[in-house]
Image (cartoon, rainbow, N blue to C red; front, side, top):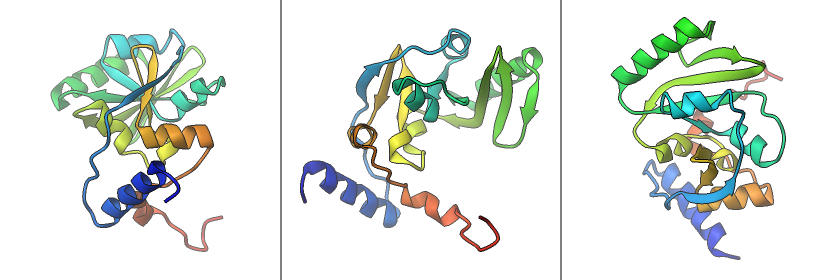
Length: 170
């Protein structure tokens, strides 16, 4: 192996292919980012976490297409918070996400409850997107930071089984 990063990725993918959970390193504080003030109340008042593509876009200095918010806590709290948000912000919903707009910002609440911020970004299919906003900073895992800096795209092999590669889709 050329370096520890390549070895770590090989072990990570091997564990996934064998169906075992890979023990990630602790989250690393990467860079300070500023998020729009319209998004802050959901993080500060409701306990949501901003993660994924929006964090990557903000790190790169561009405006995100949408803001995916994830909840850490218990199911009953999440249900109550989501009901309150539905009353205030009218939007669209399916079984996976509640989508609404605040000013000109598209916000998507992911309808799944997580136990820890690490669990949120561990569930992402692409290593490069495994970033989360906490306390003014973007955090991630060591290998995801490397992917982001070098623009390397690794897909989590656990998600491949759900991809439809039939000829019906272009």
